Length: 125
Image 1 (tube, rainbow, N blue to C red):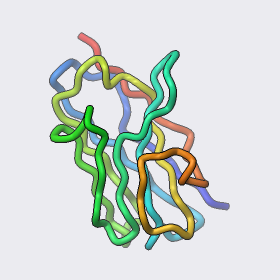
Image 2 (cartoon, rainbow, N blue to C red):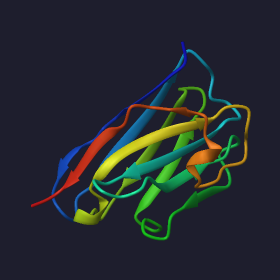
Image 3 (tube, one colour):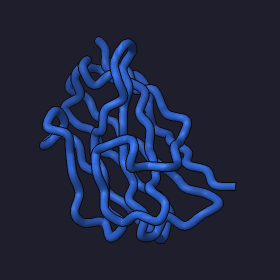
Image 4 (tube, one colour):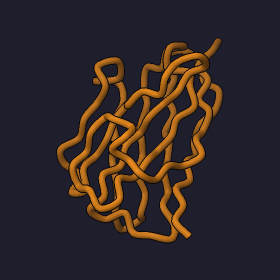
């Protein structure tokens, strides 16, 4: 059974950092594009970052570029999203997604065909 499990979310103060993990089980994520998306209450889901199957290139939404870093270790079947200088506008449920059979990555949710359940990130003082 294919599964993507996110972890690492929580409550953090503005200016703080969090590291999200996306662990795959039941399949090998080698060569699959992996994306991180987020959805805040009352807003549409937006692409945050993605990594292609070969780990490069990577892409970031303008709102997070310079603050977030995506990385992957295919041997560990895991992708991480390092988030720094967090602001209340980063508050959302964060999802990772896999584009099975697709190596190229795009920040479009329709490109991905397998999703995790999400992890809540709350940035508040």
